Amino acid sequence: MPKHISRETKEAIVREYRERPVRQAVIAEKYGVSIPSVVKILSQYGVPVWGMAQLFSPDLDEGYFEEINSQDKAYFLGYITTDGCVFWKDAHHAFLTMELHKKDRCILEAFMKAVRCNRKLVTNQRRDTVAATVTSARMVRDLEKYCIRPRSSLTQKFWDAVPDEYLASYMRGLVDGDGSFGFYARPGRSVHKKTFRMCSGSKDFIDVFVSKMVDTLGVTIPRIHVDAAHNLYDFGWVRNDDLETIIGFLYSTNGLYLARKKEVADRIVDEIRQHRDNGRLTAS
Image (tube, rainbow, N blue to C red; front, side, top):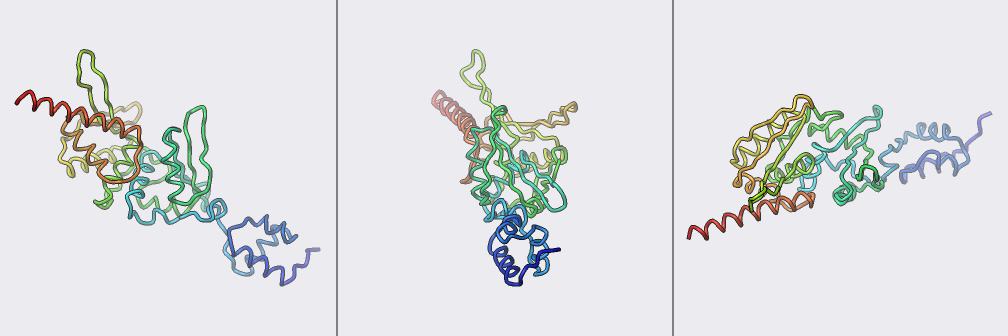
């Protein structure tokens, strides 16, 4: 025979459940009723059930990406576009995951702080990486507006509607995800070989990225290399004036960046300027 639950107990259950995110099992144990009974009571009183996002992180800012209106949001959006992952467990539960080298941990810590997610970062000792996961169907749906979808590495899209004031931060996020700066010694030469390269599995992404760089900065059009065996497109710039212009643009806004990549970028610019200054001294 089902246990009779008084009206006072039902109202107490509803009141406590509404106050803060709490698992139904916790409520059931506290009031000495079954979990199905808690579910039935909440339904009778028209109380919405807390989702996984609220239960894991009650203060989570699920609407963080509803609008891109800050440099940090633009940076995170760029990084997630090239090196993040979103997926749906079912029709109601979705996840956003980012994994970086453990020495770049500060970027993930900044992201989790920005969205007010209290889940701990997970370290993979074998791969020397650290990962952040956010559970939020709303956040994943918002990211779809910016062309970020599950299993989209080969159909990756550049969000070409990014506001001009946030373009540098957005592209810096893209570069920190899938770009690289090269500063290599050359035998018998005092000047290093310097490069900036990007890669992607999406030709459409590459075309828009290059177009943005060329149209916005006036840099030369790079040659795009195709690795058909790995479905990969690769391109970059090597001319000093192009490199100086691109690096200056990418780091023109305050905000987040991968320190190890910026360190190489700074070395590239320093040597370009030093070499140029030495040339002027020789000419004079």
